[in-house]
Length: 305
Image 1 (cartoon, one colour):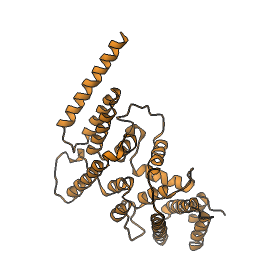
Image 2 (cartoon, rainbow, N blue to C red):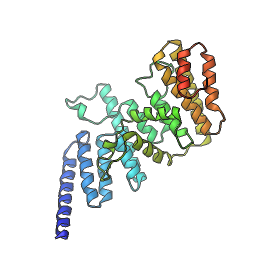
Image 3 (cartoon, rainbow, N blue to C red):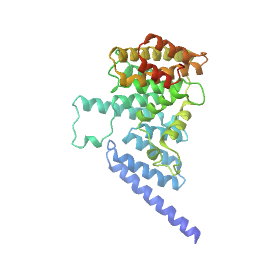
Image 4 (tube, helix red, strand yellow):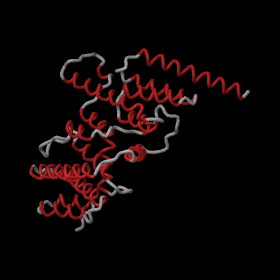
């Protein structure tokens, strides 16, 4: 009796898998709804212990909805990520091109909002996770002014890179703020991540994102020259941002500036520079000695009185 029930369940899973695959072949690849079908189909493949078929469905989910969540699933859960990487990279470039064509008025479709494309910030985020750091820099981190960052990739880029460069274990207060920026920028949620996976979600989105980021980070290697280059860039960008905020009296961004300053000091300390955080905070306190509100924000991130 038990064997019969197991066979019936197995047959049902196979039937649903085949229905899902048929739908994937019929629905245009560019429609984001196809991603949901791919993830549902992946669950039926996993119930039949067919991991490779499930992975192919994860790839199709990313092809039709090129989000960071769909990227991290295939990147971190597949048996051989590097076998999929060239295809995934091609999907990213195609989705970014689709957005560029739309913005240039070369594509019109009455259902375009249902189609897959990547705007610059989303594209740069995926370039980051693809370790294409110089391309990410060229596309999204070339601001020359300290204001007007809110719609750009600058804040996300700074946060993601400082988390990567941090060499410690537990995140200090400044880098925790960077993690929150990165989490929001990635549009991550545990509920979305566990679609297409038979595991049960028991963690908050931010906790899960932190664990996945750390798993990804262990695969990444930067040379000392690359590390030095990025530390230099980050220091200059923070100086540029703080100067722009101070010169234009944007008090509502003092806390953001303090978080970037603290995080940068924490990164430097994690890489062996003694008292770097206190030193950089005191430097900014001296430079903007009359900005008591700014000093309060710096103290909230660890500056001593």
